[in-house]
Amino acid sequence: MVWQILMIYRPYRMKCTPIKAKSIAVVVMLFALCKKSLTEIGWDSYNIKGASAKGWNDLKGIFSFFISCFICLMILSHARAEAAIQLPEVTAKSAIVIEAATGKVLYEKDAEAQRYPASTTKIMTLIVALENGNLDDIVTVSNNASQTEGSTLWLEPGEKMKLSDLLYGMMLVSGNDATVAVAEHIAGSVDAFAKMMTAKAREIGAVNTSFVNSSGLPDPAHYTTAHDMALIAAYGYKNPMFAQIVSTKERQVPWTGKPYNRQLDNENRMLWLYDGGNGVKTGYTDAAGRCLVSAANRNGVQLISVVFDSTYMWNDSIALLNYGFPQLNPVELVKKGAIVQSVSVSSGQKDTLQLKALDTIVIPVADGERDKFTTEVTAPSKITAAVHKGDHVGKMKVLYDGREIAATDLVAVETIDKKSFFSLLWQKIFLTMNYLKQTFV
Image 1 (cartoon, rainbow, N blue to C red):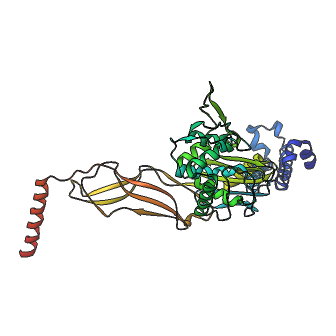
Image 2 (image 1 turned 90 degrees about the horizontal axis):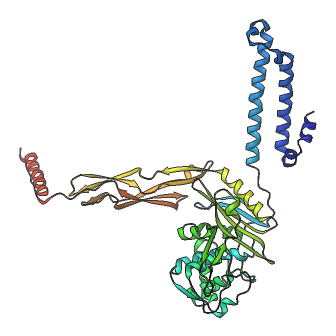
Image 3 (image 1 turned 60 degrees about the vertical axis):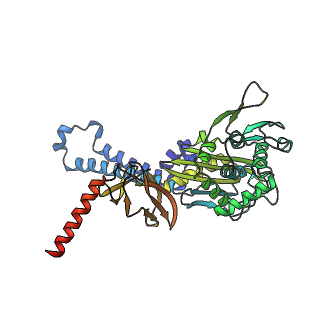
């Protein structure tokens, strides 16, 4: 009977894992036993007022019913827990999901293999441009940039655009011509800019990465790994402007000589498909296959997933993120406005000043890893008045395995004015008299 029920409920049966199927089978059997027990005690005609006449057997039947229901709920809960920890099945040849702040790897599949990154290369292009350029700079598009092959922003030779608009153009619609214009503006040439990209990758820790262009067009010397690209994207999220650009769904930028603007619609469907999705970049070439670096933030936990050479890159990315989030618990280490430390104040109208956290810090804690997180407070033991409310006095750092992953400034809770000249004079006289009294009396 149990198997017949599972066969009839085809939509569920098609999605069942072996663990789920076994659990549902047990639940159905228990339900059948419950029904049999209730039928035997005449549940349909049961009269609660006649309970005492029914006797002990009826009470045992009712008790068995509730116990069986409890067991059913426990088994269903266990089935959900088992399903949650199952490894994701992905079609990508290389895949990984990491927590951005700590770099902790939550899942990986051939993540150290060298792959062509295609247009996910532009993640590093954006990082280098943000760190070395001025967003308000006016960039003049060269003939070389306008003739770049592949996906395009339709730039014309001699066209002038703000650097910020070019960055949106290369990240939202993957304009290869925009990346060349950016590279030439910042470094003078694509080759020089690509060297800056590779050097930055080494600095981040992406040591198995080499860039020879700014767009991601195929080249044997242009490669990375899923792990390296995850580290690069995670680094990018430390820059608020990076996070803003890659999470933008649509934007309009000027189109010189046209009566209308360029309409940029982000090609990254994860911004719509996934709850909390906030980046990052798609990519495709025949050599690289379908590539996607995606990101999502939930309750202060930022995950990065990478799939290279994937058959179903959207499904793969969703599966990776769904696998990653349940493994981490967001813990509020310090709340904005919480008193963290006190310092002594000299020459002030008060002797002690309290310092509060300027921001809330949430840390992503995996099971058994709470001890890997430590805090470090840097603040002077004594300061001299006057000090004003909101003044930055110290800093609180959060370390993961000894490496800083988050920080917040510590600011003055209140204003403490400097004592007046006469107050200071009287204090010195009082201290002197007290000293003499203790010495000679």
